[in-house]
Amino acid sequence: MPLAPTARAWLDQMSAAGLPPPQWLPLAQFRQMARAWVATHPVPVARVEDRLLSGPGGPLAVRLYWPDAPAPHRMLVYAHGGGFVRGDLDTHDHVCRELCTTAPCLVVSVDYRLAPEHPFPAALEDCLFATRWAHTHAVALGGDARSLLVAGDSAGGNLVAMVCLRAREARDPPIQGQLLFYPVTAHYDPPTPSYGEFAEGYFLTRDTMRWFIDLYLGAAQSPVDAFPLLATDLRDLPPALVMTAECDPLRDEGRAYADRLRDAGVDCSHRCVSGMLHGFMAQTDLHPQARDAMGEACAWIRAIPCGR
Image (cartoon, rainbow, N blue to C red):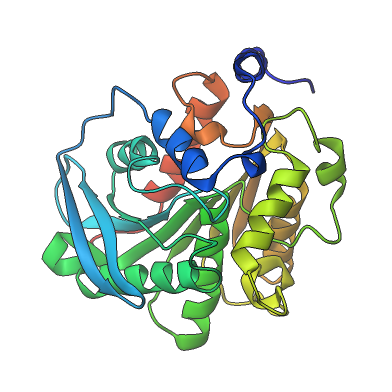
């Protein structure tokens, strides 16, 4: 299927802007560009609060969103995308607000450390710490510790999938579901067919993904511990919803991870959203398909038992 008309119009607008590839820009400028795209009319929620935790690498900022609904709330720890090298609490504020109000759930957004200043496993350690913090403090926050979920997009999808693997091994914390939007699940070598099919001209490029991953891994000798698709055992992981975009280099690895989860006996649903580009879940104001996908994701969250 070709690009959806709204996706084509947005892609044409981006092309007309003449922006160079991210790897050609100073990192500070690349990060600032993400902040310039923040939604100007955020979805209202009942309450928002920024907190600073004592994380594994120093101060760790989180942002909490409360829904306008009776407590206790489902707890959703969110890890933003950005190729492991950019993104923060502000760049994905709109996504967290939509999840908070539509699910509804108490969202904990994590401002994890970024590469290349902090390569693997810094971001993963921060996300795991924040997930355990959310579980420990659930009652005080008005949440239900028995209804803890994790979610993330792109690089963030990678991080929360890895959090689930780490939590399974340590049996801490108990995670009831994982919501993965077009996740990075594998190294770029060997490439999947979608890496070649959408190598250029579809917003996220093959070369940019290679740059992201190289910066994230840094001096790590092996990518095995950094990508969930490379894990040898996927049994006993939390139920999952994996959403991928049809016109995205990451499409096939997301589908492959969903297939492996199901093969391992995990309750996993997968939906490839037709005509969409990487990042579409942050554009529910532009694409009907994105609005539908967000509605489906929030319905999936609501199906997780809460307040038992």
